[in-house]
Image 1: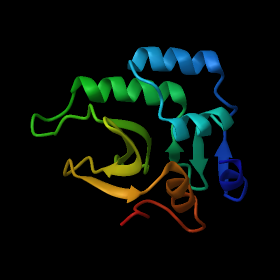
Image 2: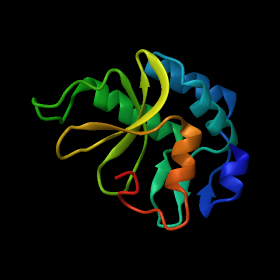
Image 3: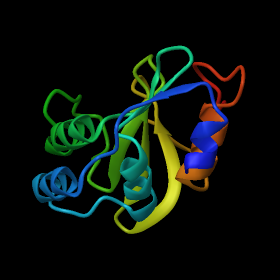
Length: 142
């Protein structure tokens, strides 16, 4: 992951320590997927050149997912989110997630207006390369 981040115009935070990760996993009731965990060992969040939180800090990952899984504040027409682990956004309300039940490396985007879930990358690595590519902004996955 470091090589992807090193070549990008991105702001990275200090790494997540093991105790913080264990606490987040306890709160979530599940392990953080392996490749996301590897990224968090390098940085606690990634912000692109436009100020978009491509990868949220671990505390936000935990808090946002607990809220999403509860269904609180969502329209009744939304499909459940229990199979997804949200980890970043596009700055306009759409959020990126990994499938965690069953666990897969694929990254999907959830469109907050239509409740659609669309595949955007086969891995966190591919997601980062695309999201942090020079000139990438907003709806780069479309």
